[in-house]
Amino acid sequence: MITPAIEAGQLTVSYGGRRVLDHVSFAIPPGSFVAVLGGNGAGKTSLFRTILGLNTPEQGHVLVEGQRFGKGRMPVGYMPQMRRMVAGQLSGWHMVAAALRGRVWGVPWYSAAERAEVNAALNAVDAWELAARPVMSLSGGERQRLLLAQALLDHPRILLLDEPLASLDPARMRETTRRIHDLARERGLTVLFSTHDINPLMGFMDHVLYLAHGKALLGNVDEVMTTPALTALYGAPVEVVRADGRLFVVADGGADTLHCCDCAEHTR
Ligand SMILES: Nc1ncnc2c1ncn2[C@@H]1O[C@H](COP(=O)(O)OP(=O)(O)OP(=O)(O)O)[C@@H](O)[C@H]1O
Image (tube, rainbow, N blue to C red):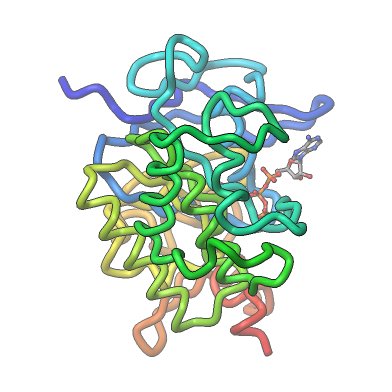
């Protein structure tokens, strides 16, 4: 049997007794491109942080290529949500370089191999022109590219990307998704890609991992994005609507769009 890239077994994550993930189990096949969906507070970031070993599960486990985190070097690149990013006078190049493994903050010397690795990561996301610019002068989309370059350092086999489409306009969402998809296919990477809008990922993702009310459902788009499947997951009536070739998940009553088009670009 092929070892899953990521496997959760009865995974339970709580904060102060409040369960965010409640006995969640799934197995992500290696090399797959997975959209991680769910409304605000559904637990997407918590899941990523648990995979990275930054949260300790209350119960259950999560395995990366069959191992618990901390057992040897983990092949995982992480792109955090941009709102957690601290921008400053640092140039784009130095911001990416700061994420090199084993770097001591503030030490300005880089080996030739480290410089080559940073340059390669910047080139891979087409961000070479951002290398000399102060991060604080960059647009949201440009900062996203630097965060993605950071995640590519150290040759990961798995990428955890936390809302890489936040703050992008609709055309850029599609372009960014395509860039990540093509890069992942070229390198054989497994990608977990959290987003509030599934539509820019249409045609790119292999699976959807949908989180709601502490539970998770993994499958392909046609299995997960159905009214019965999501109603069962939420434990309350929701409707999956297709309109103009786009997918919407709407709570019963119509007013509350749970994800997709709750992003600023689509609610204006
Ligand atoms: N360190 C923490 N301490 C206490 N509660 C936390 C902590 N981290 C997250 N939470 C809570 O856990 C829940 C899940 O948060 P999480 O950030 O994982 O959700 P998310 O799906 O990524 O949300 P969003 O789409 O809004 O980014 C939220 O209610 C959040 O307030």
